[in-house]
Image (cartoon, rainbow, N blue to C red; front, side, top):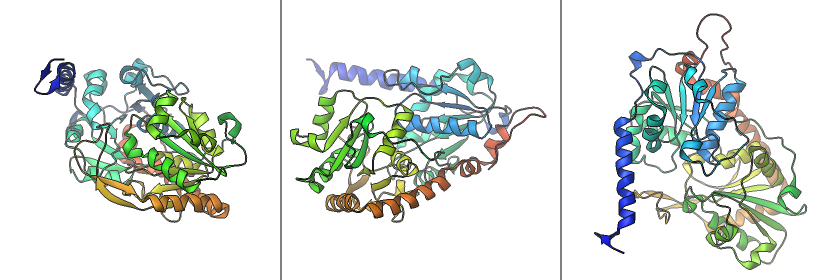
Length: 418
């Protein structure tokens, strides 16, 4: 095959097309209007990947549901059919573009800065003009990528899901940044191990991984290896591995380095799960294991805590709002240079390599100590319900959003309150 400067021509052409398209979006996409021209007020609109089985999709769904509970009567605009049509879940609201545009209140856009030019180009100036735009962003590493800087042009304020993220975005000094935890209610779903093929008599660990969100960062391979070491020669525990982003069980098994002998105490699940099914899954396990190398907030771990389940997680500042010695078992990590074979993180920097021996010890300790699990789970449940409750959420939104998101005109307005 012919090459150009060492590049294979098809790859080079595809890369140039992506660069050209990104430049076109950046040039043509409407920006957030100046503060002096903001005059629209009314019901807010949540814009995001509402049917995507990802963390950023979940954050949009949580925001939409919370604003409904708080009486804002929001509209929604789902970006999934336009930008991620292959991977969609079904049990979420469909958006109606005209209805979303008719709602004159502020936009809450759950998408990270690199995606904003294409999204705003798609929405158009008429949709954006004259109203406040709030960007909900999440990042995992300790430096904001240079490609994110232009994202501040598209929003009036930035909302961040953790103190770690809020500090990162504030350090740029571009816009007001608010720490707004993902709003969530406690999960009281009925456990149903039989629905997932989980034996009733085992201590069950859950690992979740999206193969499109950097396998190296989520580090499910580290969890598999630690679990294997912890229970060598024993069948008293089970590792349930929930993989998102592929339905190919064989490919997922190879990626995780699973062996034929692992089938006795490891169960790999690669089929999509609905929101309600995920709630049931959390309630059907005992411990959630996350030996991640970096996290912006740790949404899976928070959801586990709100389900009354115990968590083992890598000690990383992005999770520190929720993970501490009173709410979880922390696995220490040593900073190492980033090595991401998928190329999702390519600008250098460092993340944490979890201590494998400490992880094995933590896994064994929690498996053998149900009283410790109960105490940690109870403390974690109380802490997360306080941090993620509706009262804390509406306070975090701030006056600027509250004032713009009320219904225009006199009478019949519904203001959200704690």
